[in-house]
Amino acid sequence: MIMKILVPVDGSEDAYSVLRGACRLALRIGYSVVALHVDRSGLYTPEFLRWYTIKRRIETEFDILAKEVVKRSYGIGGEMGVAMEVVMSDGEPAREIADYAYDNGVIKLIIMGHGRHGGHGTLRGATEQLVESVTKTVILHQNKPVLVTNNSMEISSILIVIEGIYDTDGSSRSLVKYAGMLARALRARVGLVCLIPDLLAIAVDYGHIGEVPYIRERKSFRRFETLYRQHTQVIISESRQLLEGMDVALPVATRETDEADEVMAEAHNYDLIAICPRHKDTHGTLTEISRTLLNNRALNTLFVQ
Image 1 (cartoon, rainbow, N blue to C red):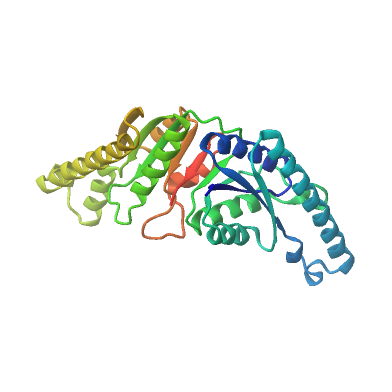
Image 2: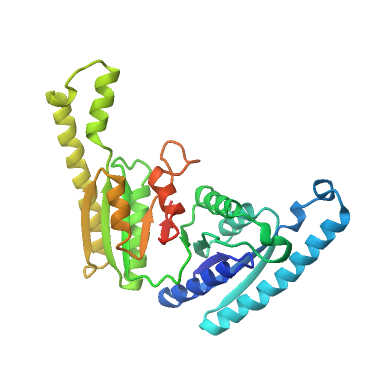
């Protein structure tokens, strides 16, 4: 069974650029591509627009846009030499994308753009905030990996970012396995960075809360600090072994840091950043570094649940 990449296509030039990038990636990893277009005209009611004629105009423009999406998507598939399927849906985009991914087990990756520009005609007024909201919702409310990009995705290096060291739900392992699979298929070099909490900041906070001066000098805190760093090394070692077990020839560089700025600086040395996006205790929100990566249009970021 051929695995598939799902690419939402809203008719913008950015979306077609992402679709071409998805085709390039599909060729390298042996996948086919599904272009999904969601007709949003049903969301615009006469009551909302005040005039029925405006609704009809919007429906007409969406119909024209849908036909153009079908034509150009199949054209890109033929041009790139990739098996292309075009699917039409209607409704709220984030929900339709998530539902389609959930209902189709062969979908193994969703690729979405940052959305610098809207569509055309009446749709030109669509804001970046709407597109970013759809992307964020898809990342948080379904379990397929989501790659957010705005360029051609020539991937020869992948940085895996692990946040925290207590992985009770196996998300870090899933992240490392998926990124490793992709790196093996692309023959990409791999970097692994473990972002740990700032222990000095924790010591200061607890010292103030508990009215305990010089808490960092206490033996109990020093033992905690030692154990924390030892466990971090275990996480890094296990992740590295997992990657090397998938392909012993895979080059892996590892490090740890408590500075998010260092992670972002390192990210610019790689073609793709892979991270688990959700807080473990509140799955409805992105982690701070995930939000930063999502908002950085210069980076390709792979969010793996």
